[in-house]
Length: 362
Image (cartoon, rainbow, N blue to C red):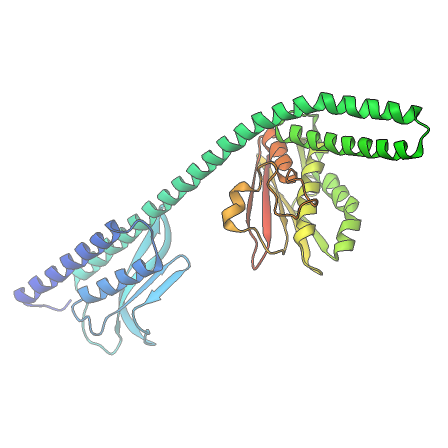
């Protein structure tokens, strides 16, 4: 290493301390880890090196990459790895052009190591805060759905008996009636009552009030049959589908009918939003404890501001008369009763992926 005078050493120590102070001050004053902050850290580091006019700072962190100026074809550099939660996720380097005969200082390497630690701590702290926010939103959503479930169960029970009476008496009147107009009117009452009972059934699904028949069954035939039954829907919408199984012999303890209901509701929604000649992909994977179903469409996607509401009963983006707003709430209720979970994430480049996790054994 190059020998330098005591005065120069003092100047370098001052620059190093200033560098750490400036980085620490900036990090403590920002709650989110943005690209702008990471770039500014690089600019601060550049100034701290002995020959900062020639130095170039390079930072790579997962998908983020930044260089204070264009790198030459050949260079000499010092480097420090950046670890995020004990996993090497990138590096920070300080370069000098290879034709520069200047040597790096040992103290500069130590400084670079400290900067890498500062970046690691900042990113980890930001990640933990973001996860805490997501967890809080998830808890609030679960509480809201739990309250809705209790209200919904009460509504369903209260409506079930009068609807049964309406349907029974309407059918009795229809049997004894000989007037054509009355028969037509009674038929409308019967159809409306049957439709209302279906709504009640969906409400009870959402509230987990429907009895379950849990059996160990093969998963692939259930999904194949659901796709086959929806074949006319796919053809009418000019949409195709692809089924991917990593284990065709996969078995799990589930309610066959309720899983079919889940598949129907999600697939019908996916077909509804899918553009002509697009593809809906159904992918099934598993591990030692769970199996996973992903249903991906190429529609317009779900706006971020309503993602937390899509599983609530009566919430729908469809025009009046085209949806009851109970399809996804039924899906949520069934999956919850199977001790699983479901989320909706963005598909790339466009569309939505519904990710379902269900235990292999309840």
